[in-house]
Image 1 (cartoon, helix red, strand yellow):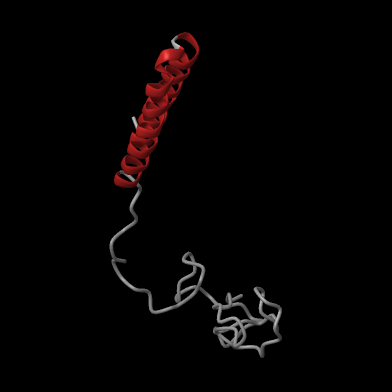
Image 2: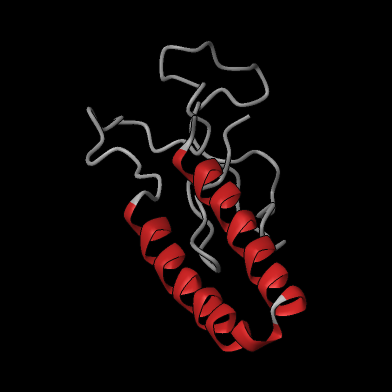
Amino acid sequence: MNGRVVLSLVGLGVIVTAFYLIFEYPEYANYAFYLLISWMVLNFVLLYAIRPRGPLAPSEASPDPSPFPSQTSSAPTSPSNASGSGSSLGFCIYCATPVPPGTRACPSCGHVLPQW
């Protein structure tokens, strides 16, 4: 079972226990409050400790800086874009700045333009 799921289930149990103490035994309301605060701090620490981590380093950098990883440099080029590099739209799809055909990155926002 995932550690975050376990923490969520334990957290629900702590909340139920605290509310039970508050309503059934009002003389222990302060302890229930301290229980909730303690669990909240402990929960944040544990969630940080078991957070998902991505890969440490990419295994191999691609020579083609295409934003679409499924496209490779060996893919056939379309007849409308015979040069095989840059955007053929005439504008940046991120900020709508006009760009000349063949431009690899938008001069305004810096995004790498897709190749079609």
